[in-house]
Length: 122
Image (cartoon, rainbow, N blue to C red; front, side, top):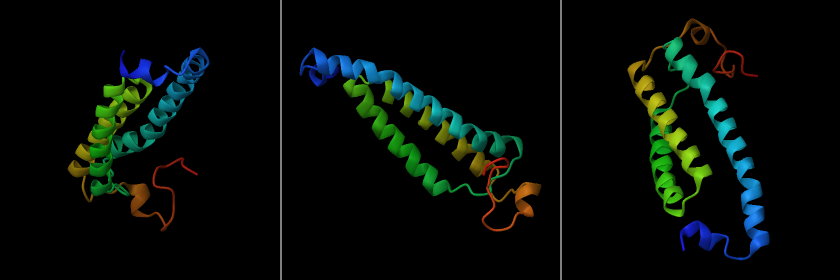
């Protein structure tokens, strides 16, 4: 019996609930993907590292790797997909954040303290 089967071995009701909520997890994963896109786009397109904390993204990357190992071990497709994306996004942000370190776009050069870091954010 695999890890996922053990997880849902509590009966058919529990299995149905587990399967029924899986799509909710994939919707959440899609929202995470959408949420990262403005940050990644701005960083690459504008070559602007304003607000990027390399130390924080290193921690996100390490955490993502550790959680991916666990998600794969238990055979959870939602969290495997989520962590796979988080690792990729964190790696991109780290790479371009380091590449454009101390580079600031025109918007952020003149932005008052506390203004949204990505144009269009509220």
